[in-house]
Image (cartoon, one colour):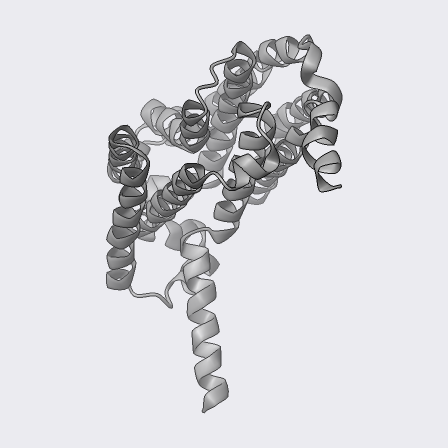
Length: 305
């Protein structure tokens, strides 16, 4: 009897972890702190950043709002996911829809509350962020151009919040953000190709559903070619240090992805490319520590002594 209860608790835990995309949340926390330490506040010590209470509130607010966003997206996409991700739907089903909705409102309230602890501007920002995620899940994602642009914008918004918090508006940060935005756009297009069958069945007017597979591939490859411009600018940046090797690898990887995307036709092929882009973006997060190796030594190694 006890083992059965433990099994049910574990199933519900993993179900909830799947619904809120816990792995993405953990990566987000890691990425925001690394960006805060090595990009947005280069003159502050690790201790000052890590123990910045308002930054903690900001990241917790992002975590709560984004977790809530995954829940509402899961709620609206239930029929679509039954076609595209039947195994995930089976796992997610251990949490009732009514429970998911209650948790959605609770997380949004907590996220907004953390925003109020920072400032009224932060509270307004998170109120708009919550509305934006809901509007995307309810309406925007069903339309070709609005869907991919709003999804990409919402993905990059948490980092936008952090760099506004540190009041760091350097040109190189905007160029890096532009590069990330283009790659995320491509990832979203590939994801829509992967989910094409479910989109058509549920009358979602995603880009591939409206314009077809070939035109979606052409747009994605064109966006990948445009990434050459921000990569070139980033590579000419003197303080990029060892992170330049990430952009060399990324440039080669994007050429490879363009070639493979053109040849891909099945759901599994699109899924592999989608996951490859996710891995490359995650590696990019880790490589933030190499933007300035002298900064790494000063902030981490020397201060540990």
